Each structure stands twice: as structure tokens, then as C-alpha cells.
Length: 323
Image (cartoon, rainbow, N blue to C red; front, side, top):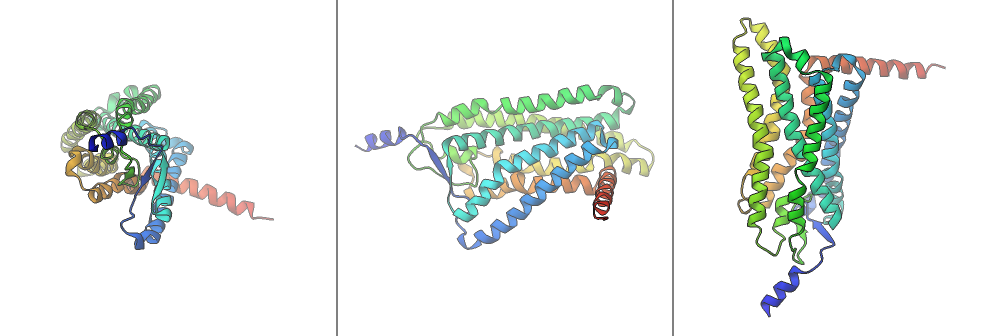
């Protein structure tokens, strides 16, 4: 009879999941809602401004800022996929998400994560060419090449998770449908399956390693070559100028890859839900907020472009108020 009960559970058709979010802290829900609403507003505003400034200022129509615009647009999509549903969970305590909504959220999140890994790697290679091979840089990284690279990153990003999505959502799920996370993430969903998931976990680990570690190693190689080249520059001013062009990107890379490897590099069974959610917040919510701040505050060209755009907007508003 027990076996029959388990079998009956495995054939239950799941139509929805319940996102538990941060329901363990009911007294903190209002504060968390206000805090993450503020973060979401800053994130969206900052990344939208970066995209608009890069599009509006001809001085920023270079490969470096073209890829930065792609990254900022990606962060807008990335955050919007996760945060609005999380904000609702602070108000409802147990946010319901339909089965297909969960599929869509996980797929878009996974696709954008892969795309970001590839874009960050491409941006590091761009800096490598600019610093280590400045004479051939303009001919190698022309607009057509940059466009082809960017399109390839996006297409690869959205094709990579398909196999894992099929394997995950064809697993039999038990009647127990509470996801111990603030969004439909891969590992918490596996814990709800009524069958052995070791094969799916192994395949997931293999795919994650390929799409994370390979771009990370390429990024690391690019920066090792950059550092060696900078060390050969005779003047201190020249060294500082060369390093300033890639310091912002290096900081963003460190934050992103550090949290991604910690969350997805460890086996599913070795992660506590609280720790998983804490690290997930870093790369899904916190990092997208800091990226535009890092690039704008540490980049003279972006700051100059922001001042120009701000001045034009102020002048327009001032004129529009004149009777």
C-alpha cells in the first residue's frame, strides 16, 4: 500500500508551485518589500540610463560600450524576470506561480545567465585586444564583428538550457509543491521530484561547468595577458590609464563569477536553503544594481556622457517652462 501511495503521488499533475521566498521571517516582510523595491528601482533606472546614454553619445559607439550596452540590457531583463515575483511574495507570504510560468522563469533566467557569462568573457577579450594589440584592434573589432559576436552570445545563451529544461520538467513531481526559494531555480525544483535525480544533477553540473568555467578561464587568461602587458609599460601614468579601462569590468566579473560558482558549483545536497537564497540574491538582485554604478562612477567617458545628457535634459526642461 505504501508503494502504491508513492506511485500515486508521482503521477499527480502539478499545475502550480508555491514560492516560499523569505516566509521564515514574517515580521520582516514590509521592510524587505521596501528594501528590494528600492533596489529594483535603482537597478532598472541605472541600467536604462546606461543603455540610453551609450545609444545617444557618439563617443561611446565603440566595441567596449557596445558590449556594455548589451550587458545593461541583459541586466534589465534578468532583474525583471526575478524581482517582481519576489516583491509579490513579500506581500502574499506564499506566492503561487503556474507550472508554465515556472518553466518560463527558469528558462529565461538560465538563458540570461549563460548569455552574461559569454558577454563578460567577450568584454575581457575586447580589453585584451585593446591593451595588448592596440594597432590591430580597430580592424579586428569592427562593428560587424561586434554585432556577430553579440548575436552569437544571445543565441547560444537561449539554446543552451533547452535540454536541461526538458529533463527537469519531465521529471515526476510529488504532490508536495512548495519551492524553498524566491524564484523557480533549478536545484530547489529537483528536490520536489519523486524519482532519482542523480543523472539530471550530473548533467546539470556538466553543463554548468562548461558554460561557467570555460568563459571564466577565457576571462582569466585575458586578464593575465593584460596584467603582463601593463607591467611592461614604462610609465606609472601609462599603467594606471591602461588598467583603468578594464578595472570596472574586472570588479563586475569577480562579483558575478564568485557567487555563481559558489551556488552552482556545489552538489545539491550540500547546500542549505538559507545559504542558497543569500548567494542567489547577490547575482540576481544586488549585482545588477551595482553594475551600472561601477561602470558610471569608475569610467570617465561614461561620466562625461552622463553630464552631457543631463545638461541637455535640464536645458530642455528649463526651456519648456518658459511662457
